[in-house]
Length: 297
Image (tube, rainbow, N blue to C red; front, side, top):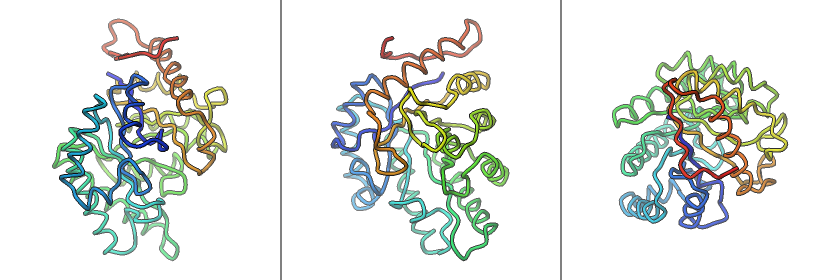
């Protein structure tokens, strides 16, 4: 059963409770939480400072908005290179593991069963093979830690990471059994790869980020979108994907991601995805599409 969710960080200019209420107003029942160092909504630092009190406050805000949590996306550093999972420093990696352990507890308290992290980056002065090897070691530790708590762990391949294209992502998956992907076509299409090439990664996806994108543009309005959402939906239907399609328009001054009307584009994207889901779903095929609170046509 494919479901829709929306990221809280789509609306960073609102305070947390208002952003959550807007997600609900847009007729989503589930929210992706960005546990980001740069976020004013959900902060790893605030969670570390007072885990029980902070978690209780978040739970109250979620209840007030009548939302469930579809994914917690952990980014410990302000930038991907800061506090990277494969940092050359053993001390930094231990600190990241501690933050990750807190994120697992946070997920469990929120009754969320999916946790996303970043794969790691290449570091100056470190052999590329060693950076990849260390990233695989940390991913294996995270997979095991999540499994012990009943969670699914996934990485999001992204620009400037060790998984910046389809080929490197495939190679990393081969190194890390049981690893899944939070798949965002935008990072690949921005770099000039075809949607068809990205379709080949769908079988590894446990969570999918969706927003308009185009070559050279991580984020684009739907009228300028070049991502093959129809092919993506067809591929997900074939593998009987049962996770979320997480609407993930963002608003940050990076790669032109502050040039869209996120409310309107989220509505337009959902309409297109609903139409594609309706088109590919046939009676008797065993795939159920939950269309709670559709935005209309």
